[in-house]
Structure formats: structure tokens, C-alpha cells
Image (cartoon, rainbow, N blue to C red; front, side, top):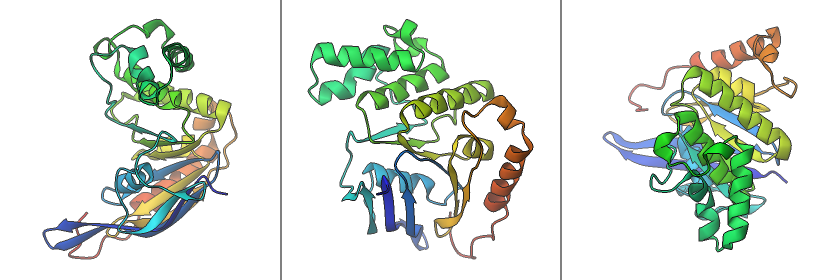
Length: 260
């Protein structure tokens, strides 16, 4: 059974010219333990699709299923990570990571032990008692990832989580995320604008088209694991990158009168 199934998901929004179709009956399955990246031009509905999977938006038509059960609102089984770290500035790293566990009613000793384990996994063990304002952007994002992992979600939904980071930190975060994914094979849906990032992380790259938002193409990524610098520089990576680039940026223009 797929971990996530989008079954003819449709969503539109009011617009000046009437209605903007963000998603036009999108169907997609993401298998258990699969790492899928989603890329496409602005207005193609990438984030809308993820927010519906997270239970933060409702579909106007169709459904999203998690392990065969309809998604009805947010749930700890779906960890959501956004570009804007969304950390509580008055809480330490450990307290931020403990937050979801505290809401879930986990006892103090257990949630502390779990938080410290997650903090160690993302390489922040020396910063457990630091406030977010003392952390770099990459460290804040690692804290957000540790917080999502702490509640042991079935699925990670990540909406451009590395988009605001500098190039070197972004590469390091990609490698850190893949190391963690290789350890537990959690199902990941990862939204990005970056073609290199989409190819490097994924088992499959889903390319979307805009106006209306729909799936344009799905490209399997046959690069081996672990992913390394040598893979980034390989001919095969270059071939896949060109294939994804062409699928994203050589799409037909939206019909006249549509709005991204």
C-alpha cells in the first residue's frame, strides 16, 4: 500500500478574473519509504499539494490518503517542515524539540531523552541549551527537522526547507537529510525550486506544470546510495539534471488569460 496517495485532488482559489485552478485533479502515489521531490514553475501548485497532504488545506474535490486512510486535518503522523523554521524564540533547542511530545502528553523524562537523541542525530548536541537567536540558519533548520522527527512521524512533508540557506550550508543539509533518511527510510515528500537538489535527493522527481496545476512528468532517479560529491559530478547526474531541467523550463506557456 502506498504511504501517500493523492486521488484526483482538485483545489481552486478566487481570483480577479474568476477562479484560479491551483490543482487540476492531481493523482500521485508515494510509496512507503520513498523519497520524492516535487519541482515546477511558480504557480504550479507544489505547496498547495503539500499543504493538503499536511491537512492544512482542504481539497475542493478528490482525497489524500495516508496508508489508505483519508487525511482529515493535521496529525503528528505527518511531520511538516517549512522554509521559515517556525521555532519558538524563547525556548531552547531542546525545549523546541520537546514541544510536540509535550503536547502529546509524553512524560518529562521520556520527552527529554527523545529530544536529546534527535538533537544528537542532527548534530546539535553541543547546542541543546541554546536559544534560536544564537544559531545559524542551517542550525535552526536542523532543529526544526529534529522537532519533526521527535514525534516519530510516518511521513515527512518538507516545503523548500533549505531555500533560505547559503549554497554550502544547503549542500551540507542535503547530505545530512539523506544520511538520516538512509537510516530509517521514512517517507519524504520534498518541495523545491532547485533542479540539482531535486535530482540529488530523490528516488523520483515529480515535475508539475502551472495554470492549471498538474503533473507534467515523473522521472525516476537511478543514482546509487549513498549520494556523494562524486555522484554530483558524474555524467549520469548531469544527464538526469538536464532531463529534469528541460521538463521544468521548456514547458508550454500557460493559456492566455490564466494567472499563476
